[in-house]
Amino acid sequence: MTSVQFTGLQACEILDSRGRPTLSVTAACGPRHTAAAVPSGASTGRSEAHERRDGDPSRYGGAGVLGAVDTVNSELRRLLCRRAWASLAELDAAMVELDGTADRRRLGANAILGVSMAAARMFAEAGEVPLWSWLRVTGTGPRMPVPHFNVLNGGAHAHTGLDFQEFMIAPVAAATTAAAIRAGAEIYAALRTLLAERGHSVGLGDEGGFAPEVTRPEDALHLLLRAIEDAGYPAGPDGVAIAIDPAASQFRQPDGSYLVNGHRHSSSELVQRYVQMVRDFPVWSIEDGMAEDDLSGWRELTAELGDRVQLVGDDNFVTSASRIARGAKLSVANAALIKLNQIGTVTETLDAIEICREHGYRQMISHRSGETADAFIADLAVGTGCGQLKAGAPARGERVAKYNRLLEIAARHPELPYGAAFDVRLG
Ligand code: PGA
Ligand code: ZN
Image (cartoon, rainbow, N blue to C red):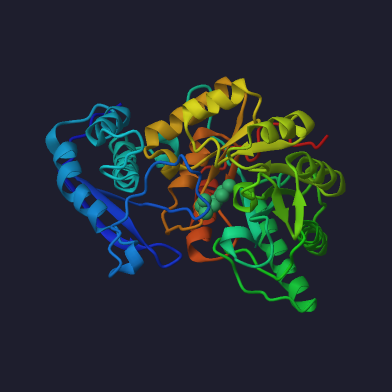
């Protein structure tokens, strides 16, 4: 790896897709400049790395990030420019050490991640390779991921009566990235027509999916199925499959029950509701089906469906290699969601992916509900060859930025295979 001597680092406060402040970071190495912008979640896991905000109620209701910006422009700039870095891993470890807290509270995970992403881009430039080609993990070649388009938004992303957060369509059997993205956009258009015909709102949620006043998750699944068929695609593993992210921590009640469209479920009852959904609809992947602290519920879900459905841990794993390893020991889930800002550096994100591979867990690379036009995750999904990316609807600039980046990579590199690289056939 070519070592890099950075000569400058500059952050500033910008807005994310929800109109909340976040950071953009620019790194310099002589005449070369690279930049990155940091995403931000709404339905966050409790153990995520600390997103540092100013807490000054007179600015952005306390959500400003001027403190994190100042940290990049002072402490982190001094560290970065102090010497040449032989690798990103070395730089990321130095930032973590400088922070000195378990959850990146002092410097802020948002400050550290912005630097880590801009630095990754600089290492790629120094090596004269595209970012995706630089973002490799051992043992797997690059491939174009199956895009998971979140076309119906509920939960914390829409504030309608729909308790489940995400309803996604995944063109698992498309031949190419271009065909997959076309399918996503055509089904999205068909869903819009369907909703309008039925008198539903076609307003959008945070991730660009529609946010109609539908309350039963099964009714939302019916709408997706209908839209897939209306657009002329076969629904299921030979065409377009469905993935859901209920984000169950959000509708878990203090007494441990789950409240879904007015029905109170025990963990076992919720598991059985998923079992029925998988029978009735081509749902191939369920993320956060149980709340992050419902270990026995997670184990029951995994025992019931783990052999035929992808079960993705998000809030419980928070892209942490050690949490994923512990989950694997306890037979919790069979896949992990991968979000850079949950853990705070690019290196640790790649570590989490490596751990998944060691334990036979699949990985899905993910955006956050608060995004920017930065398409880093598209490159991450391609380079690591994990086979799946979720980046919201095929609409709204901050979402299509990721899909458009996939289209560009695919056009320039037709030799990269498309698809999941594993069997998505439902049991
Ligand atoms: P978040 O949601 O970015 O609001 O946390 C995404 C998810 O739960 O997967
Ligand atoms: Zn999630």
